[in-house]
Image 1: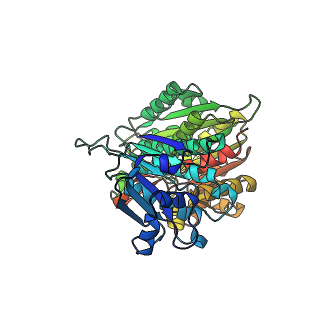
Image 2 (image 1 turned 90 degrees about the horizontal axis):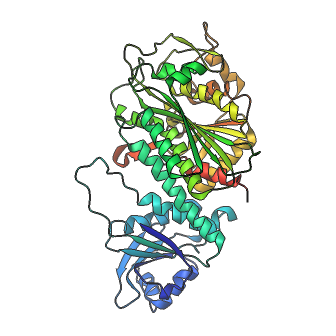
Length: 497
């Protein structure tokens, strides 16, 4: 697929399909006015006749004869007062829905001058071009590698987006949007790959491949013998029941100054989760291939950094294991000693994500991090609390938490902060070890974060529980690519100029 930005006059830019936005009421964007002039008032006639309503995300396709374009696609952008960034994203998504399986081979999209309500950071032309770029990649995503009968290739192969000028800022914003979309799609590919293919060693191979593809990425992989020597006993405890050995994957991107502390991302990489001896119910267990969604988000974010090369240092650590229930598996009641020296009584082997993460959170102290952000499909309780809309956010630093929340609002990859009060810590008390790995049914998302917080006291830390946002079930089943947009926005806001 060819995506490009153009500042040429609309009337002189050929394409099979011209895309314009029309509001329900009020003034049109300048681009729509220019298109209407080139079409001798056709768009206005269609609106007057009621063929276009302007209702947000509504679409209509109209054939053209003897024009620079063969078709006209009109998308409604709603009422001026209701045109939030979220509604703009819906409108652009509707455009791609109408285009992707249609007859047009090329399209010219003119929506970057749409007036959107909100702060400059989400309504400027740069911000809208970023959104359009990301949605182009995101909505044209397919995953059919394992189908023997491949669907026919799409006819659409070229999309040109109109910008007011050819300035560097506009190009960078559009390209960052495209890169973010590709990072999301990489995340989705990893998540959608079946667990008989995607296991810890395979994930490690993807990290090595990333380092081969991009000179700015350096990868190191620790095997089970190295982890045992270091004392990473909780990661090893989770992987004991599987024939697939665990791996600790470390990827480094050094785009900032040598003295700059790195921003560290930690991802839960449970490539399949049966629950171990605390076996999960069979229904829906196939979706436990998505239990490596945190690691997939880390991979996707690193791909965006490698493509765009911002001036920032980022270290990514993935704790990868498969949680299986064979005769060597960990049992409820086992006590293990973590890399930090603290002991954990495993009361439930299905609370394994926090066990692999705690050793990783101790390991990353060696990098003297600026901040540490971990992400994990950690608790079903987070889905009960927040559904599939918001990622759960807990942190030991208010400034970090607020910055992540703001990044989520800017990108539409939203998060919601939950408390991390000391009063919850007592739920993890154990009669036999320093702590238990579960705290009972009440406040399950919070007590899981409380467990992790005990290994993150020496730096600024935030935890993203993406159990409800990393994938969708039902007819739309598949990985979503979240929280790549949130992470990319946050990291870019701290990159040097």
